[in-house]
Length: 115
Length: 115
Image 1: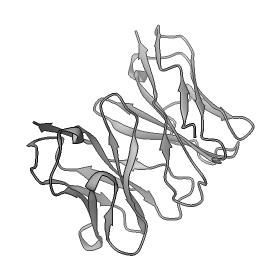
Image 2: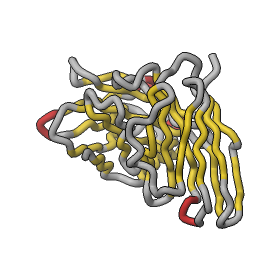
Image 3: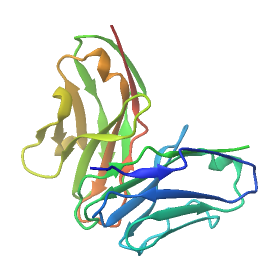
């Protein structure tokens, strides 16, 4: 079956612009996670959704970052007023349930470059 | 909060050599443990996982890992590596029962297998 998909695969933006990154989880997966992978920082957890709600947003790096999930499916990560330090690969993962520590399936990521 | 430490950032081996990648975590409670692999140009995929039971777990492609609770370790092993094992390897932990937690990853080990 189809895996986790993310779009766009690459995004180059100018400093100060807003960007939206999209994640389509595996059908039927209720839990969705966003991570950031950057040089020197490794893989960093950002936010988790169970259904449409995000119980804990404390992992988001700043208030310029926000995320939403609609219909228990697609999620969008928005970065406002992008900065160069936002350059990274943004990964999305989904799992059957967040309440069980099940396997997370990762998408290919969106490579964001802020110039 | 938990943290994960991977001791080797870069490892170079010849084909047929034995492999052991170290992983230690810090967390006083019960955890679930994972090894993920990222082959060049591909997305993260699960190699193996430990939830409970036999501390020696076997994964795909001949990999195995041993959970040693007293040492807070979950080292990855393979008796004889192949050129196709060249990849980035990530150890990760998730607090057991921590449904809203993302995975906490180590910084990764870049493994290069020379033919």
